[in-house]
Length: 411
Image 1 (cartoon, helix red, strand yellow):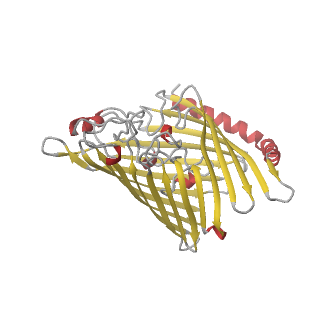
Image 2: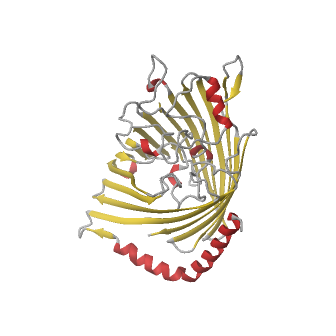
Image 3: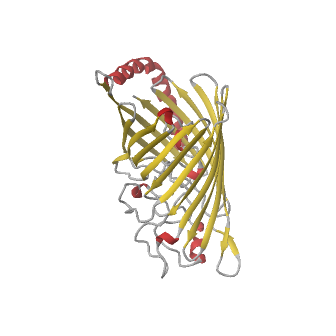
């Protein structure tokens, strides 16, 4: 039996069983919600423990695309996420998110991993959300996808291309010249050494200020690592604050239906210890990224769009630029059932080839994805997704066909 057929059989059997047990599970999870909440008698202090259980399965026809690390045709990825939210008075808030899984990205740590991915302390300086400041380790303010990156809010199982499509940019090894840099694209993705434009939600450590003023939203952050940095560089002292990154987003909400925004980020992307050309250091090689995002809600429709352009200063090569965008739509057939469709593309500019000409520094790519999701109760959700992708040129394709399923329990 093919892996895709096996996955389909597992999904059908699981859905039939889930349909029979959803009512009982709803009652038990409601009771668990109440048991995991504490509050002082005067209401000054309150805290909630909540969590998500995500069970994911993937089957792919070739090397898995994006930030999927396993190389098997069929692989599973379980994850337990725990959240502690605490509020003291009207102005002080704290959050801790811990995870138990096979790595931040599916299969990155096959033997299993336990981490604290997010923690922050927030203070509301001004009333009505006009100014908040926070410190800790938390998701980047860049872009429009990050606020809905968790499984319960994301219509899909994975991220748009800009947030997970691995390029030939590396943060660890300096190319000897244009030839070596351009030659990288002829092989499969080196996910242990290469970077996307943004690494998912980029839970880097630092400080931020954000708020809302009438129809405008703003958020700015000062972080220890770039938005493309890999998870092992996200903790406060992983890169020793040697060359921090500054990012920000400004949004405008002309009405309840529309939200438009513009983002920018600038900072060094090479890891400390990387040997750079004589007379330079890692701070001389920056990642500059700009983006614009849009969301629209009307009746049963939700539409998102985002375009992100990035320039990496590559040692011994020069600036390498890329542009990625996606268009995403979600339609609610019923209050519980939805369908979603997303179109992604990424383009790569030319760099000098070392022989007097120019060549594209990576292979242009596109991907189309469809998903269907069903919310059985306010605690249980399932998704099934199919994606097809293609890269320019004859070099190895990265998983042209990917089928995935996700089962989420929220408590």
